[in-house]
Length: 333
Image 1: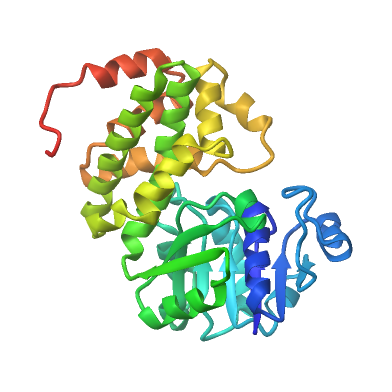
Image 2 (image 1 turned 90 degrees about the horizontal axis):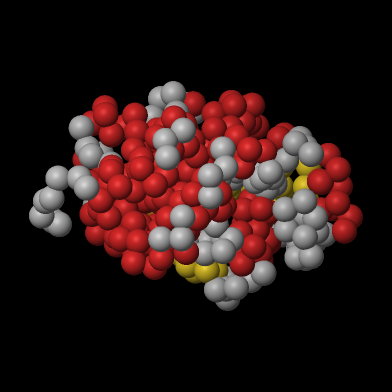
């Protein structure tokens, strides 16, 4: 079997390493020629995963045509804001009848589309049944180090989810299938915004009680929106919901939590992002969450405050006071 991964950042490279266990060759596309050369000659992605060996079966390239040639499975691992542009350039070389798995955890700002909806918007209808999404608690570094990782793969067509599951099954990587494409994606995208909120509380030194409250009430927000959009509430208690949320809100490797901590310490968003090499998806998703909240009439108070802090310069302490002094209500309403 031959697979292709589009996006040679940390997660794309880590997944290419996983696929290399079951595939004879994995094409890995990225824009950086020097990085591609290093992966092919030294079998290391020193820019994103320094010191972690990459399988020689992974062949990096800056050519989409070369990466996708003969692929029987395609993984899209570009940041959500770049997916539309990359898939439009990849379309002429995209194999037919091959699963296309998106792993980006975001919602497009302009259209408020999830990544599978974006792919359906970009690709001819014949590709639509083969679209899938992978999400769950999975830091790229630990995945690349072959530490045990468990995720969810969702597709409207069970056969596609099962094909992806089999290709990615290893001794250290396990996946469960789902047909709740909506719930899996909203869990994966919005948990990044809640992780920024958890980081803000940590940056302010507000303690473990506050973090637990943010995780719990954040899950309530995510579930409300996912259900309004047609998702299954049980999905949000699983790997792509609570599992990913807890990891991203508490893990030291979380980029979104890091952004929140720096915001809580009083730094400006642009200054924080300028110091980061990798993308924190929650920054852009905070805007999408705010806009979706208004569009569909679902209250997302934590997400709204993250947007106000990040984009409007609101005081983090004032945001916390505003959340704590909202009108009292029943927990399950």
